[in-house]
Figure (tube, rainbow, N blue to C red):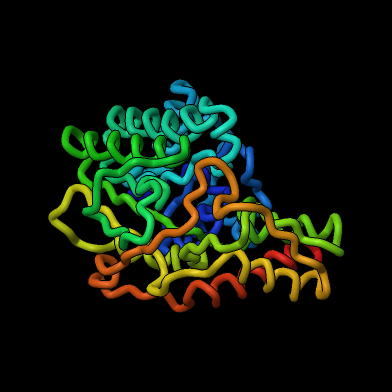
Length: 323
């Protein structure tokens, strides 16, 4: 019987990069998205693929999730769910915590409920480095704790991890929890690079930066991320729950450096105006030091370091935005 992958949030940034890889593996792929940030156009050349099926749905609504699984079951045997559906706008979640509860946690809860009802055994979940909170200069490895997120986004990602772990104890056969760093590339729907490019499109004379530019974080190109996830998903393991940080092996790039590279590409000569303090917004973690020893032990290393990933993404996003 044909194997079916459900990709929740599959028309968004990361999902749109994963879907072609799944199709290349002769899988039937059901992309479900509410198109809040995702778009059918993000799927590019695979839009007309015979094994690709598009469903528009709010995954926080139980009946809609049930309908999704009924539709997908008619196409073959559903054996995995890739869960990327979430609110990706951290400041929006600070202003209205219902956004993160509904779009990040409730989508996880309802997908897991449907997986139990339809006897689907494997979930691959897109979590985040935001679950760690602000641990300063400590190297963030998978066993560190306690985890104290400082944003609603991070809190709901952590709650989702916990819910998936509990599901693995009772009815799932495998859960892969991927903790992402800052992922860059196209199709860009949010993030500091897109924000800078759009600001310069409006006023090419000055780039206003939130914070003093000293924020330093790990950046990973989406192409490297997809290959890392596929490697973990394809591993044979006795663990029911596999938790992995995915990220570069370097110490990251500063916002100041990103601003300089964006200006050089989009509006040479523009003045950069920095704000105060090392946080861009409430819930922003100014620095983190990411350990990726576990996934490296699986045989994976990124092809690009943080600055290389940022430089490539700047060129891609600038082209996406018409520069």
